[in-house]
Amino acid sequence: MTELQTISPIDGRVVATRNLATPTEIEATLNRARKALDGWRKTPVDERIEVVRGFVDAFVSMTDQLVEELAWQIGRPVRYGAGEIRGFEERARHMIAIAEDSLADLRLPEKPGYIRYIKREPLGVVFTVAAWNYPYLIAVNSIVPALLAGNVVVLKHSAQTPLCAERLVEAATSAGLPEGVFQSLHLSHGDAAEMVGDSRVDFVAFTGSVAGGRAIRRAASERFVGVGLELGGKDPAYVRPDANLQHAVESLVDGAFFNSGQSCCGIERIYVHRDRYDAFVEGVVQETSRYVLGDPMDPETTLGPVVRKTAARGIRQQVKQALEMGARSLVDPDLFPARGGTYIAPRVLVDVDHRMDVMSEETFGPVVGIMSVDNDEHAIELMNDSCYGLTASIWTNDVDAAVSIGDQIHTGTWFMNRCDYLDPALAWVGVKDSGVGCTLSQVGYEHLTRPKSYHLRMDIGDEV
Image: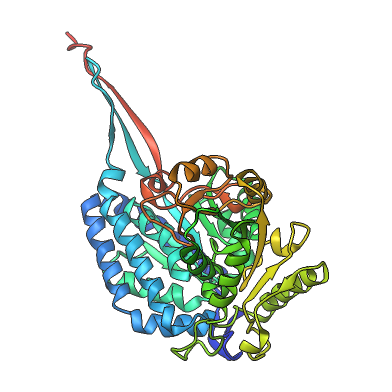
């Protein structure tokens, strides 16, 4: 039996050891899911809502335990852990609030002699493959709306966050979800790919790397099965000359370094109008210097380690390449005593350009590059010079300019004067290599249901 070990980025200790699911266990899980589907999909929406609401309540009640476990599994400082639970609750409760309207039959204008409507039917078994960096926020995007829509769910969480999958199932079970409606499995990549190809799976919701997304697509290529992919990002920001500079500095530094830069929609590159460039960079250096790199279990720590040593090596390599190609690092390293391993001091790089990986490839660490631009057109050109398109932001007091520029940026979400946030009332979607499909909002329900048209002719009279 193959074992899964979760190594903590804090100090290298093993925080969880689990057996990977056997073929027999996978088979039994899928069979339970198919068996549970018929009853759950026939359960009225209002009853599904009540059960899922209880699931959310039970999960939120576990906050103190979840915060400490998150720190050990991914290295996020404990002072921030409860924020993810609040985000989970916000998204879940919004999807609950809009469920009845979003899932209601779509009635068409009256046509004499006919009844016509479109019913939204559940897809069936949803296989959610969630990433580690926001293990609960990522999982909730598909799990809660899928359940509300009448689907059943099998969850595979990252090998870095196995406890998160178990806590979600624990909360769902305590809330009374019927057997087989929500289950989890600890799986190898190979077994996950086989599940994607299994005819009992009706939809795959994957969050992870571009390479992982391609692997999911290949595994699904022999079947006509829906796949939603949220992949990488290299999210840009543009600071216009009319921006509130203090607000832009504070928000963008947080957007770049929160969760040690390991955010799907974190800020990785900033373009600043040349008239504000020097003042902005000075402000960013001052703001970054306030961070405290250290043990995530210490409530004073604001910057923890990155998730694993291999990730740290990749981040350091990007910085090294940039420095060798002429970039300069501005933050005083003496403010962040060397700890080595998974601990990386925040880096603010200038004199960067798009030849450097740090401005073109996903970094997923506490590093941000800053470039000056001549005008809006220059900023638009550089922001679009990327294979990614998850989010982008503009910092300005001119709403008309923000909308006009936003219309020209290739991105799934366009922010003005904020970043690194997901509003559950809006569609969460990427373009280019950032993925396909959509979660959350009313639009998200359309990806977890299929339309079925009813065309009933009523004017043929009685047979005599």
